[in-house]
Image (cartoon, rainbow, N blue to C red; front, side, top):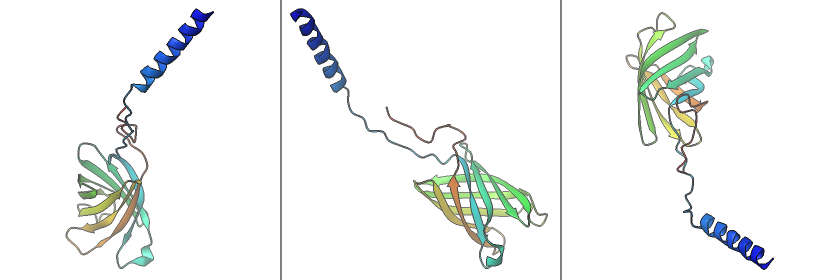
Length: 151
């Protein structure tokens, strides 16, 4: 009986020492830009238009596809994006939409916050048309996980 109790105590102490000896490593979360971002845009000086649908599909290879609505017509644009710290920028060209907008070059700059929000300004490169946008991260198309954990 004493042998069983001693063996049980020895095994318990060994288990405690083994689990205690593991180094504690806190989880670190890294938020990736790649994925689908959906929100709205507005046009400066034209409040009667209201907020309109806008989205970015941000690809891991540095390319971007934008989608927006104007006069009940969906427009698509393709281009490139970069990130420096929390500062996001993109340039793209309209490839589908209103005939007057096809070929229009646009650019966007925004600030990213860790809650998954991208807030910024957009503009047509060759005209004075510009406005603001707010997009929220919907998913992570490419890594299927919003976090990387270091354990």
